[in-house]
Image (cartoon, rainbow, N blue to C red):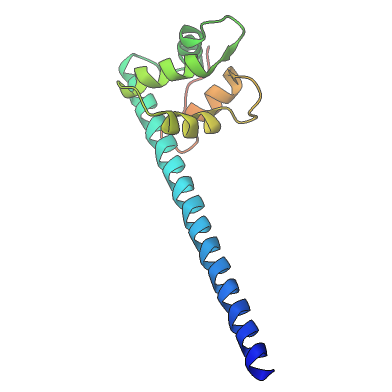
Length: 137
């Protein structure tokens, strides 16, 4: 009887240890994905601001012109294809589907439809930038 109890206890302990290891692996995976997303988003913001400035962009009106240029359907929102074209323009290369999906989730905050100008401008006019966008006169 004692051996049976000890065996069940060891089995349960092994299960708990195994589950905790799986959880650790899951936590590590989530943390790695979060870190990768943060890196992708920060790199896109910085590179966008550099490209925007290199093309003379300084104001919210200039930012609106960029948005309007890439917003192809006329519905007032960037869809996934529009955003893909914008990112290709910014980064000067195509990105993987996983990379795009990570950035899309950050751009499309409400995850409903596309990206409106308000979300677009708040994403790229991040307060961390030293030079905020100028308001239109």
